[in-house]
Length: 281
Image (cartoon, rainbow, N blue to C red; front, side, top):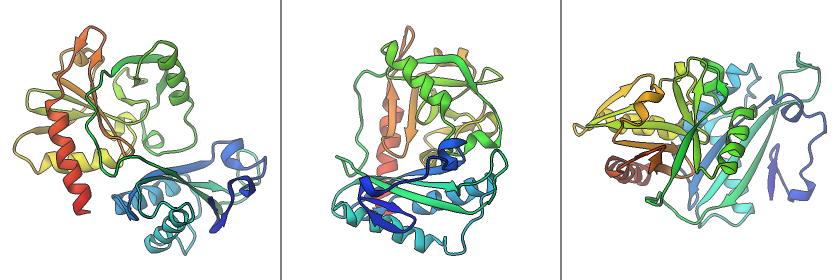
């Protein structure tokens, strides 16, 4: 079942025009949201990121787009798919209404929600081998537009194909300044000693919800020193640990980059802290 502009319809009945601007121009933003037994994880962060993304894209935010209204829309699609008592993954996409060419005929929006069942309620630690490489065919452009989750994901798609063709589990993306920005599907963190580092949003890193949660955790603990600073590719092989974060998987430790193999002690510790925070809401 699909929630299309507030109406619950069957998937084969959820149709959009061929000239939908999300399809024609990538004129769309989205949120990937994890829900556990009907509870939306980190809902406030998702809501404000969605509102910020719509403002950056100069979309008209409907008057009824309150946190309560959108929360009800998410719960409606969960119930319609029978996921109220199980973990699920929601994709909440907002697109600008059809009309115009590069210049939109309107700034009004439509939205669509889809739900997918997940196996695990909370984040599990994955210690299986996980190898990454740099993707250097195309770059992420530093700046505000790269920080939002829009439908313009060509670099991520091409990087994912490259990873698949070369038997890598993931790739790390660079910006035009040749700084490491993120992974194909999440933010990147580097550990050296007791220092944990992640690229700043100004470098073009996605404004990740789990990234924000981990920064809050790191700033409140005396166990680690946190830095938000650019990461050079040369730092990767000198690191003690590398890990990737996103809402769906939580924290994914990287086991190998080129000839360097990594530990995962800090990643495991931070994952346990993240699960505590998720349970407490």
